Length: 234
Image (cartoon, rainbow, N blue to C red; front, side):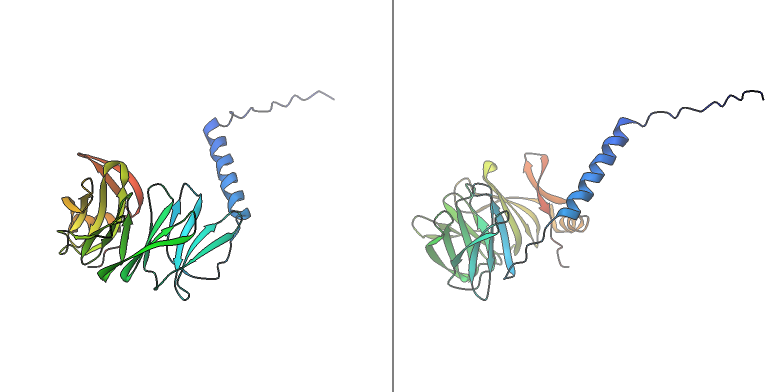
């Protein structure tokens, strides 16, 4: 019987980038399947992360508490608060927190898990931003609190109705979303001063609905810094 010869075609090698993408996808799927959910006995009202402590700082109501939570060990150090909390901000060094309440701000030492001081304000502290030496309270009104002396200094922002804000410590600026648009607030002289309006309300709404990230502005250069903007109500 005559011998048959069969020729088998050789497939082209798979590109390396496809192999890498496949490995990354497999790793992401594996991590998702192995991810653990740690239920909490309370509902966080607000939260920020302390890089220095490598822990999540959360506040909750009923009971009124600040939580220093370690997601790895699931330990939770609790600090009792004098009123229901509305917002929390962690200092640039990660060692302190400011908590906003109705007509009150609480200043907390995270290392000792204790209240250092409370400060009275004349309005609801819906938004707080904690700097190195000052606490900035923002909402329909805005004031700066000197942590050392407790002196409350009003600002020129009372007509802007700020709804969200973040501190860029190296730039000595707070970037805030308001009814007038995206604002840059100068804190280099400590008390709040409006530096400039970076985006008008119309452009801010477009950015928010597009999921555009928060921005820190260096001169005319825009740098991505923070999480997506919250929706702005018409």
